[in-house]
Image 1: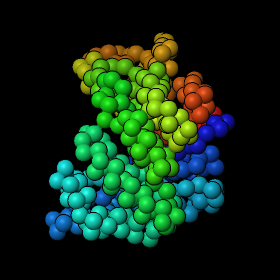
Image 2: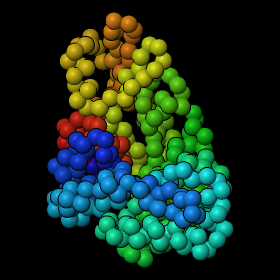
Image 3: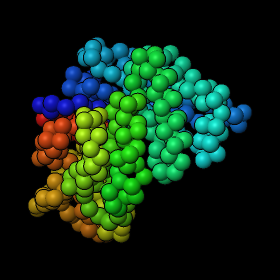
Image 4: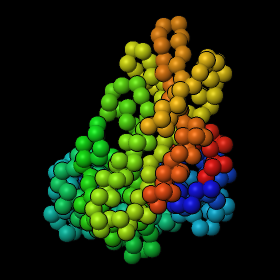
Length: 318
């Protein structure tokens, strides 16, 4: 059983995650449904979209199975330009308006907090303005008894370091958990290979912990673990696969062998269809156990993207 904090993302396009959250909810500290977007309007105001995806009955069911669980939907900043960021942070009234839009919505839905996804959209530019806005949202939510979590991008090659140890130091008093996106490695390399290699993932954690003051707050870091796989094709294209697709594929192609990638701690197999070779990476129990052991060794938590994509027996380890 994992001893650290555990967050699970749930997406509306993968309904199995809703069932997982109810069945295994007792194992989680946070559930984050991917429902909401905050967008600027032509009138210079801001609105939250995605409310049609909110399932209040499901939220009640999840809480009934775990009275201590926190429901903290992801709030992604969509269609924001640098001009919008400058506009909001240059005007106290604009900033207060934006914060009030967020607080009123989340309070009205009786959520326990918000997972903000904002950093990557600005590519590490205008950091003081980002710090200002994140602090303001956090303070607004905190006044109503809600927590703020922040999605942060990886900073070790092949990714650029746009969130660093100094950003962590500045923001940690305002952030309950930092969710590190230590997956999608293949998107940056453009090559067939591990999706979230563990050696690379842990280097990202160490990059944040290099600052001596940050070591006392390592419990606020959540190591991002993917529960999806990727089928890489010989033509250079690839497709994400989830649990039931993986099982069907293995049954269909009957791989002659599976390969364990030691440094990456990921499993793969190859097969050929009528046209080309394929290389498939997908999580396994050993994959998950290695990451649990690493998280416990580093005294950090885990965030799963996303819980409907895995195999149900993964939760035996959590």
